[in-house]
Image 1 (tube, one colour):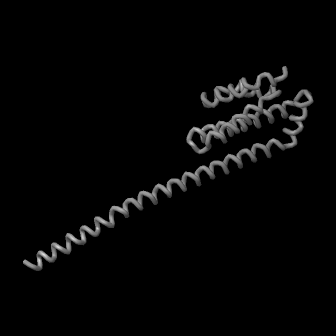
Image 2: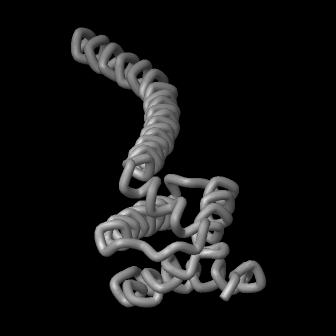
Length: 166
């Protein structure tokens, strides 16, 4: 009988010790998980920014193609483009717009903060300044883009309409 009481005493003591240890262990585990999630969010945002930088660089470098450079110079000089030049510029502009639409999705998912998105929106609007070809490309392809993104592009164009030459 004495052995049973002693055994129950030790079981109860061990149970209390486990309960004392379990509470802080659970709190520490939750804290650790929160810290890991925050780190993963930062890593995800950094990867997103890197992806955007690479995509922007890729599109920019593609714009240095000799055909596109020649076509851009002709646009500046108000000269007529060859069919190859116009097609090249149309494809390039569509690629730029698709990349910007991807940035829009990343902003909506929280991978880009508001300040970064505002900067990208401004840059988006500058694609249409004094560029009738880009306006035409947008007008013809607008329906193939996300409606919310299309509204944003239209707003950016509208804000700069006084900079367009006819």
